[in-house]
Image (cartoon, rainbow, N blue to C red; front, side, top):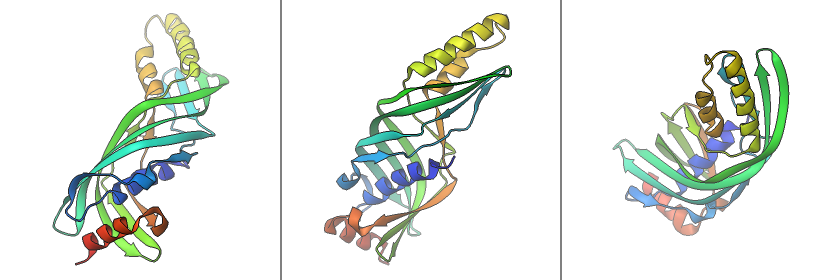
Length: 213
């Protein structure tokens, strides 16, 4: 997934920016509560034989309404981190549907209703030229987000028809959940660079105090 890393980079930036010198939390970083564009591209195929659906969003706008981070010092300069992000958004949705070899493409508007997503990771911080490097390890394999679209109902209608032909052997309920809460894959580890421009002087002072031996 070509744009999965930028989505995770947003999460890393939020986590890094909310650090206080004493650890724990919750902390927030107001300059990262803003709109972001085109963070997610094509998702891995969703397959429930004989139906396979590949979702993609060629364009979208994501609004981060708020966030909270908790970071607990581990004693080796790193932190056990937990992050919650309040978000909503909209965009375009494209679905390539393969129903037992019969293929079609569906398009519609995409809505991300107001929701809170969360993730945990081990976080390390380092001062570099022009900002800070945030290194995360032990990330979850995926991050689920709730979506709404008429396209989802159209796909489920196709699935219901296939289920009738299959005499109930096809469970469209599992497909429904996968379509309404698609999983964005995350890397097991990743680096992100938080620039000085994303930080207030107070933010930089807190980070410097945190990473100074």
